[in-house]
Length: 338
Ligand SMILES: NC(=O)c1ccc[n+]([C@@H]2O[C@H](COP(=O)([O-])OP(=O)(O)OC[C@H]3O[C@@H](n4cnc5c(N)ncnc54)[C@H](OP(=O)(O)O)[C@@H]3O)[C@@H](O)[C@H]2O)c1
Image: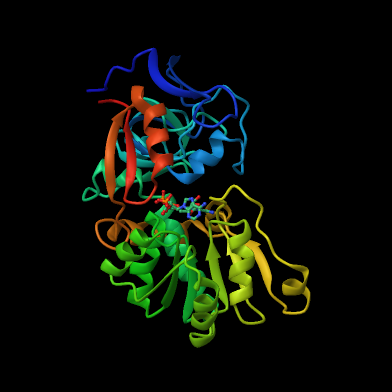
């Protein structure tokens, strides 16, 4: 029997681009799915660094406030709009990806496109794991693909004790790729060592730059993946041999990535960027579905996200503050319908 869909729902709404302070928990109309769209009753949605960037208006899309943020989530399809895929999705458990065109996942209901916004979950994947199954797992898989295609036997990774960093370490170890891990606190060194990482360097240590340079030359590293940006990008470039690249995939420092003219001109080093969305759309449907299928198989092992705490939607502003105060150690999940 079809579930009754209410007219109104609870949602977390961003009213201005001022960070977590711009959030309010409100009642909003439940959205209706249009052509090639489905309505998902949201079970869980994590707080990710990209959500923080959204709250500050620093993400790759910037909807006009007020709007509901929330980059990914999981749930059950409870209504479908017109279009060829609707019947396939009706009643299915899915992972949802927000594209900025409609509202995001921090709400009891969310409309997503059947063309990339809803990904069917295998039965073995819980809705909790499903909520964090897209952004980091597919990015970790993409990084390994990039490293292998580029013939990189070793890479630098920063910040390495993040959920994504720990996934990359587990996948890399299975592929025989050495990871030179960069973190900023001793507790993170310990965390990664316990996971089996052999090289973990703390950027707060006085000997960091020299140790990183030695490791990069010893392992002949030519690729660094950096989500901190700011001055760390220039420090990574300085440590790498000539003809190397730093790929910036985040800006946790909220600072512009730095590079000196000498690094770019005379040492032939470069800086580029990575964003999961365009990486996936560069693939055809079969390649994307294969990547999704492989990722789901590894969700309880190499691509697992630790969940630190769960919060009802009403407590979302507090949960965001809690997450900002300490990001390492697992995701905070919002549970909109509990
Ligand atoms: N471009 C893409 O398509 C894409 C896709 C997925 C993820 N990402 C990026 O990947 C990064 C990791 O995501 P995640 O979900 O794995 O993060 P996470 O699990 O929430 O962990 C964030 C980590 O970053 C550290 N950190 C925060 N601010 C820092 C700073 N200024 N300097 C150094 N370290 C800092 C935190 O350490 P503390 O505990 O010390 O704060 C924590 O270890 C994020 O930047 C995210 O946006 C990008």
